[in-house]
Length: 115
Image (cartoon, rainbow, N blue to C red; front, side):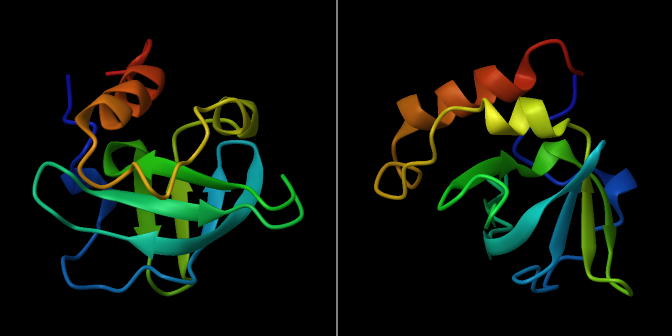
């Protein structure tokens, strides 16, 4: 099983690249733009502003859900469907840093049935 909180080598992510503003594509279509991104070892993720798709909602996606980073087109492709992302645990900007229980909840959701 791959580490859900790390960028996989296959994603072609280059450390130091600022992903903020990149478009995010689920396996079945566009979901929004990156609002925040981290590259902390073992704790990397992106926060996506879903804009009008899910009005006013942000979602946290562990770096391990990223299939490919396209720096030329400024797009990130993730290996989840729009429905999977839409039904993810609510993003909590006050809890996502330092709350291991919240991180575990996100990890369990995105880790189900995937390796």
